[in-house]
Image 1 (cartoon, rainbow, N blue to C red):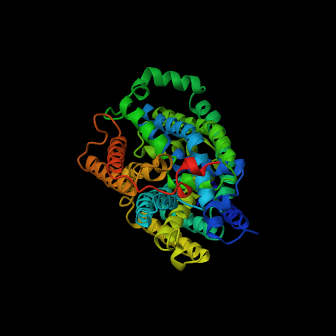
Image 2: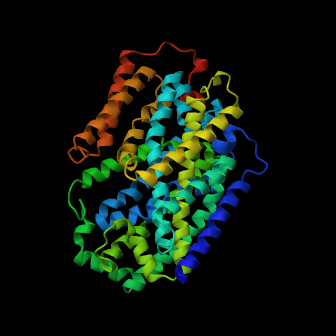
Image 3: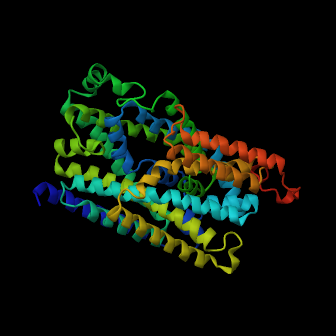
Length: 491
């Protein structure tokens, strides 16, 4: 092991131990209820909600995929910043309503919302299973992303498989003991290092390889202008229609994404969520830096075999080992934090709704639901780890349709809270329709469809069917005192 690798590995080891300690200490003095484990008993203030939800949006993809997509395609990657910021504008209105509804009825997940609103346990189970299927690939992506980050920052001293195992052990250790609160505490460390790393990259890389960002941008305009116009460097389907339709779909979907909803429900009050929606868009500006580094790699490393290594190729080439380690640790934590939140969300969905009897409980105590949720989180983490070690492309291929699949839950989780006449039958048929359209478009190679994101096409079909069926088969007249819509549940 070289001297540079020794420094990087030593600092990485210290950081991982600190992560475990922080996660475990966060559980001191807390109750051992499912609500505490899954949503911190709605106990996080504005700062912790901010760093927790920032941790979900600034993942290992931000260090790898954002720079890699900038290197490979160019301007289409800006959809990432656009939809995250637009989604927060939607969340300003939606998140407080979801929080109030769930707090009033003691709900802890989107499966709970569907089951309670439509008084349908089968629908709640369907939502839980769909979320689980589509979230597992995200867990594996974070494990593999950490492997790439740690392998690069250690100058190859830590191989991909060892790094994957480390990420699994670290994440499982603190989520089994402290749950979402541990993720929030670790997010403070992660975000502090991420902001510091981004500041270093923004200042040093352009000056090292160029004479500053001005020269880099000038060279982009004169030598790589195709990277600055739609549909990007490789041509194809990522045009303006795809860009706009993807922003619309993702901005709506992120508000019902299971891990994001868990972040909403962890807040102390709706006002904490409103402040989060005001402050967090500024955090998305940080994503400009990996995108800029990816563009710089077009000139500094023009023949990369793996574009996702664009950022770390320049980092390991230009910066001293301690700084490389700092950036690598930030990247590793940017995989561990979202991975832990994904596992907690999956555990809650399956442990409570599928195995624990749902809202009725069927005799299962809160302690049993929490234990089942923890075991599910452990099992799913092990499945994702095995997939990353043995079949690295098997589950990851499913991630291509994951976001579009979860988008089909918008009527069940969100629309039903605003429209009283929406029925379980309408939601169910719409969900089947939307899912079928997603699968059909991908299977036939028609996503995007005429330039439009296939997920938005599917969601449109979903909404039409759900609305039509609900109108043709209206619900029985309900007692106003048991109305389950936002209008009767908000303060």
